Image (cartoon, rainbow, N blue to C red):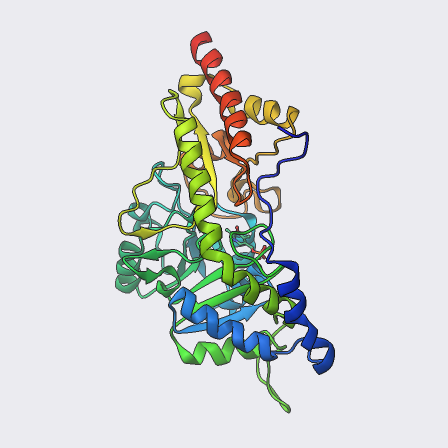
Length: 380
Ligand SMILES: *Cc1c(COP(=O)(O)O)cnc(C)c1O
């Protein structure tokens, strides 16, 4: 293997000339942002690709989530049932809207929110459920809808990891009142920085359109406390170029995902993503592996993380610490047992996965993991 750094991901780039051709007209028009031509075209193409009724493009995934929550006009102090097993953005978006996160533990099978534990967390103050399709593993959307309906709650999905995924042919962005996607450079699909909210309520389109433009609804009418959350034309152009290659990229990811599965099979104490995807179109965004310390001994995850770094492979401890344990809001919210989320956070490692990752690199990574697990397992 060449001595180059292998990061957990690598941005997919369209052919240089295609992007150049795309942005050249921007020099003529001088319309660089403010919902220009590419913005409109990209919203249209995404509606088709994601199979959703409405798409509102945003400056990034985080602001998409913040504005989606803001658009719901929840009373301040309301409680939002959410998962602590996610990127910190999810929890921040709740708190920055003057709402309180109520953490619900996750399932060990797929690390998504345990829908069986949602109802016991509902109080008079509960206003919404905010689950995350973590690693692209889809939540139990049907059960969550049922609970939300029964208790009259809104559902907002953080679908940052689930671009292009489908359940029985239905785009994942159709579930809940609104779903948000991230088009950050590190994600399966990117616009350098960017994001979007998807939903079916046309009124929400108008509302978000205003919110992302400082709350300005017409030249002389400012009717919401908005902010600057718009996607610019260069990002929209990148999105249009990348969209041409997305299926190919997902196919390349899938091959590497399956190669990892083969190279890491039958290691006792190592848990790989299950591939139980009969009804699911999956995007193969991540390859998380969990090292069971009860079989492989304590410290195995961190030892493998260090060993990989020695050969310049930068796997990531996503998601450790869980967001409930972040320093900035420790002990400030309802204390709920989160045994599964903490266990997974302590023992998981996300391995490099991207369309250009070489199979030799995967073999090398797998052999280091296998050796370390074999020695650790037998010492125990
Ligand atoms: C990346 C990510 C976000 C934030 O998206 P940005 O585009 O980086 O702002 C939010 N939630 C999850 C789960 C993410 O992975």
